[in-house]
Image (cartoon, rainbow, N blue to C red; front, side):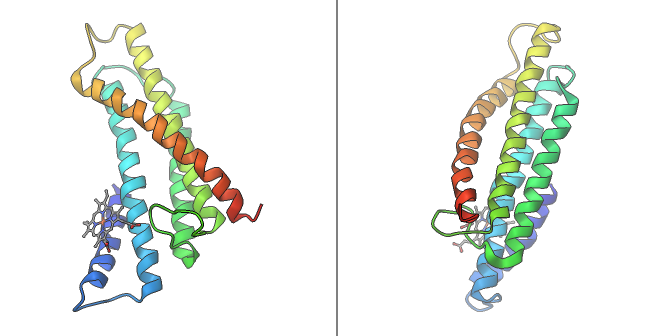
Length: 181
Ligand code: HEM
């Protein structure tokens, strides 16, 4: 929710610049703010929220304990550190590559490193979710099939594993490129 707040505050800068009568920020600041807005909203807020939904759908809806709380905290720490490292890189001003961050528009190495750490954390969290489903099944905390919301969360988590891992993998060569390796 903090990332949603930050993304919303940044949206004010984006809107007041796109509004021709106001045209608030100069171009370089605008693209920096737009990059942070896009990433904080569509990557950090959305995926933090998705992981929260996964944990809720597995533990609360199935009345089951989280499979591995310590690993879940590790995943959260990676996501938090990664998102902060990425934002610090963006606000240093040399990583205004937009949300999509296409090569060869180069950002600072920490821009990519932050995204990779975040993605690894999110992936670990997806597997904590799957593990929690296994625990619920084994300990028979529910009867019959899983509730529809949990089913939807399983679908979302399967898609997330594919998208987040491909996103993280493609950023590794990009990160090495930004380190001039
Ligand atoms: C708080 C209300 C919001 C406002 C006023 C707002 C406003 C804007 C504006 C004006 C742009 C630039 C469009 C352009 O110049 O072509 C933009 C871009 C964008 N917004 Fe928002 N937005 C808001 C919320 C969100 C939310 C909730 C998300 C995603 C969950 C989001 C994701 C994005 C993305 C991904 C971009 C493109 C960034 C890029 O090109 O790198 N925004 N937004």
